Length: 315
Image (cartoon, rainbow, N blue to C red):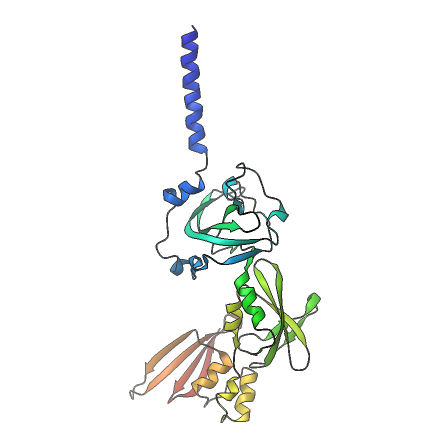
């Protein structure tokens, strides 16, 4: 009788153990090594390559948690803790870490009332500098759930304090305390007065800028190279000193006129979304520049003999 009960207990224990192994989420190392599908070219899929950020130092600015049911990836996974333990807010807030490894894979997301689905994302391995612990966390291209800023970017921005920049793609500065905005003309010079960490991890770098008349505002950026892309580092007027005053006035107000050369149009409207070359019946060559405007309006600029011939638009 004792042997029969022992065999039943063993069978019951084996069934329970098998079910536990089947439903238990795979470990992070297992997901990294083989259970997660790798993306062959993440730069094409995501538009950038986070693997280039390995070795950079980050500064945690916001440590909130996304309420996913999967305990292994509830914002981050700490292998030194029990599976379901949650970190406190101040454990990472305003702390430094160094990115040691980044790889791509898929993450099974659970949402209440919906079926689970797979989402492609990046997995990060970070070494905390204040206690030398290793943590893992993830982000994807859809939500871009960043909670930190790059220390190298912050230092690069501070080196440019006092420098003059000329507006290219920015036409406003935000005023403090949500008081409104400061309008900017195209190619207007502004001075970088100070740099601070932003209030949110999504836009961690806060740049305070001032106009010649003393108006001051700020802009928030994810990376400092994004700011450099939005502004001219040198005065464009010095490159074309022979242009007429009326053309510069049109460019400052982002307006066009027939007869403008391509360089004037580029300074006024920026880089077009598309450039095409057409040939008329008389075999003359024409270029069509396409711009995507506001309210789903598309503009078509026609150039002949390197001069703006006409402007058409379609809603």
